[in-house]
Length: 140
Image 1 (cartoon, rainbow, N blue to C red):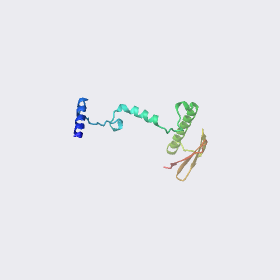
Image 2 (cartoon, rainbow, N blue to C red; image 1 turned 90 degrees about the vertical axis):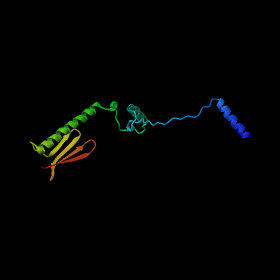
Image 3 (cartoon, rainbow, N blue to C red; image 1 turned 30 degrees about the vertical axis):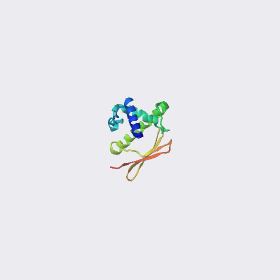
Image 4 (cartoon, rainbow, N blue to C red; image 1 turned 120 degrees about the vertical axis):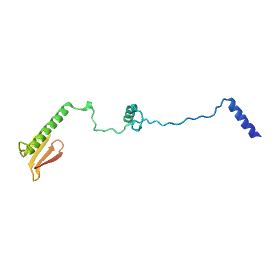
């Protein structure tokens, strides 16, 4: 009897307190990442969030403020000279003039041109680092 009384008392108090029946709604998944169907306007936010959390920075990365205009000019000039030389080598091998074996020094590069059994061997040595590259242009 005591149990019935407490149960009745609890229900009466809950009714008077305005307890309403429990309600629920459906859960709907909505992707945030644009790669998985999310809003494309989230891309910039996701990118900046990932970059701000990135702890692994490249120690050799240079920014625009750290670049040297004179060094960039020197590198660009070396690239243009090497491009011109490579064009001359190909034209001389397959075109009008013949390539003369010998040694050339251009900027930071030492270029050795020799004739081999399979074609013309061109060895390019970077005098600053000592790195070497060998290119063989075959006979036709």
